[in-house]
Amino acid sequence: MNAETGIQIRCRSWTEALEDAPLLCRRAVDAACRVAAADMAGRSVEIGIALADDAETARLNGRYRGLGRPTDVLSFASGEAVGGGGRPEQPPAMLGDIVIAFETSARDAARAGKRLDHHLQHLVVHGLLHLLGYDHETERDANRMEALEVEILKRLGIADPYGDAVTAAL
Image (cartoon, rainbow, N blue to C red):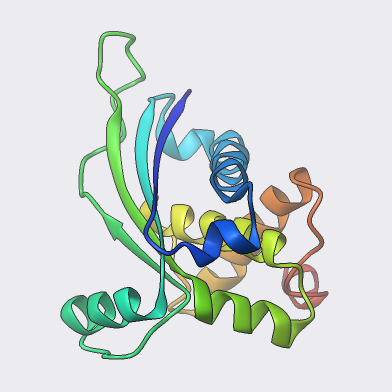
């Protein structure tokens, strides 16, 4: 199973703060795909990631969610089915797009005492899990999604961003 990841740098602050931001995104996608391989039914996927700013996420958040304020990460699933047994002749399934805002992400990372590179990878993983249909609308769903995030981040050498709350809930 393979993930083709297209990355657009829409806010220069990302690469000023993290020279290797695109590589970090690709590493996070690869780790998430290895852990969530069953959700992809062995099929190759395409994912778009936009490293944007608060203004862009505020516009998108207002247009698609009715919330005219910036947010750290937005996911837009394509709705294309990922299943199909992973036949080699199948083209990759377009999972969707992830948009991550620099200012909100940097501020949240600083406030939580986290490294920005780790936080970026966490947001990519979080967004990708949303594209695969995971959510955090109920406590049970949130615990399931957070446990997957923790497992994926551990593979990347990143500490549990939720502390012991997820482990205690399982």
